[in-house]
Image 1: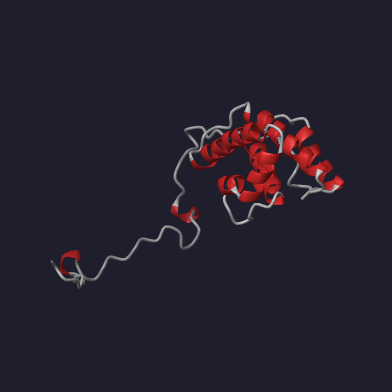
Image 2 (image 1 turned 180 degrees about the vertical axis):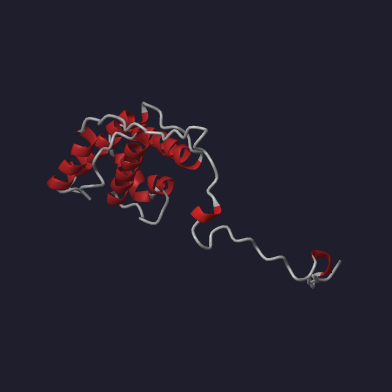
Length: 173
């Protein structure tokens, strides 16, 4: 688990690691592992924890906002906003502190998770695009192609109009 909790400086990667840490925290509270993140947040054990925790409903609403952002990032390919990691870090740190006090985490596990949250962000990795000048941009010649690449599909032996399609067998009312 040590490699999983190291920050890379990539906003998307660090945000996904933060969400995975949130998911781990919810599973430690008793949420089923096979559920989605939203279902874990709504599970009975997690709800009971939020009801017993001071400011639990406010914390749960802020976590819902983080889950909705995670869904937008993963499913709609939205960009990770700059506020996402700092706010998520504060929420998960509060949860981790509460769970460590209740002995859900050992001291070593808690220290490793908190080190991930408190680590300074490394610089964002820079992309190095390879620029191909127009005079070098060309399609590969036949002798450069690997053998078996770009085979053409065989033509069907029967024309499409003469193919028989099976009719569905059902009663017409």
